Amino acid sequence: MSKEGLEALRARVHADAELARWLRRVEPERFKDEVLRLAAENGDAVTARDLDETIAAARQAWMLRWIQ
Image (cartoon, rainbow, N blue to C red):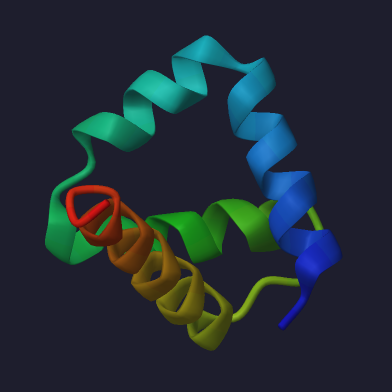
């Protein structure tokens, strides 16, 4: 996993409110493709597998917070 690429992408989205709003409006079935396109345009080394793993980890963390 390209941790550096994901962190660079997260930092870019966090720093750009308009970009963050745009990503929130992307249809779920297009989200991964749009994120990968954005990463590629900015030279961030992010793969589909990186996103799949990151999304899965975030979902698991979200679900586990209700168990505690």
